[in-house]
Image (cartoon, rainbow, N blue to C red; front, side, top):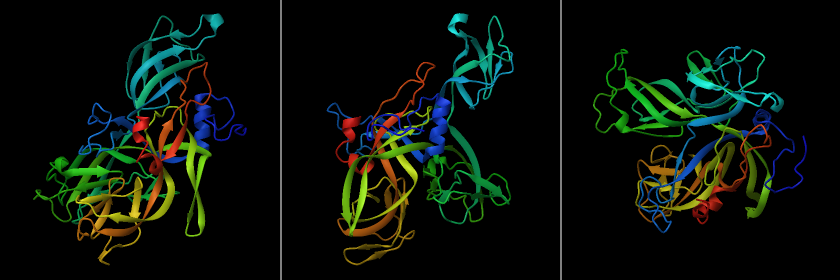
Length: 405
């Protein structure tokens, strides 16, 4: 494996030429788990290019975010049985774009097949000559990037439920236990498919809860103010759709800033990163490295809303009880909790509007995709397809977000 001969430049991190499979293998070996939130402009943006500060969708940021629902595989050498039946590696298949037999130019070049039909794991083709078992069949297709999970809970009066979406888990005595996952890396819920109350005897008591549910990351919140059919020890069955984290490989800092803090120097800055070949990446996407716990202390000012927005993007937990300027103390999980990615929700006692309070919290490092050098993957172009610059979220969000839209 070669060295980068242009440190800090927007060049491939590993100086080898590779097919997409080899590229993906390098990212899998060298990468770390990350959440990728893809961005798109919010509909509240005005003709002058500025978002509405009162928008409930983007909360004035100008962007809304989503998880990649499909991935595209380009010219995969797919397994087949030597007839008109192809079984690609990735499932469930959502769309078939092209199926071709790979031939040398002297043999007339690649031959395209007609796509007859497909299901979750199989493509059926037709043509004048069915492929032989020795033929190389290349498929370009899309598959679903989202999974589903069902989990049961016994209601204990607490209206917060954590789905077990951890990576690398084993099932033991009907309980899912994390393994080799000290940082609790997990997927993120994208949709609540069903929320069923089976009562205490397994008979369906009610399923009319979806309008009372909010969710973020692995957590589901249930507002039961108007629900009268939910009792302690009821069995709740929740089915969700979720997105798994991705592997991202990074290299050295490209720009550095030194901060002196309590007698020690902290080095921070932008990084180069590469992504697996079937991940869509563009400017403004948010990348959170999920194995990167950091801690920070901060001075906040209470707003008039039910929550206060913390300065980092993905806050994990509040490490200490909160103390305001009048020396009042607020208790974790009694007076406040973390919701969404960085919202400090007040659920009990809270400081008065305008009061300052100090807070200590842990968070995960988050970056914004700031520029791109993305190439199309084909037989002729076999270099790394995705090499981008990531800039720290806290350096971008206040003054540069609108420049990368």
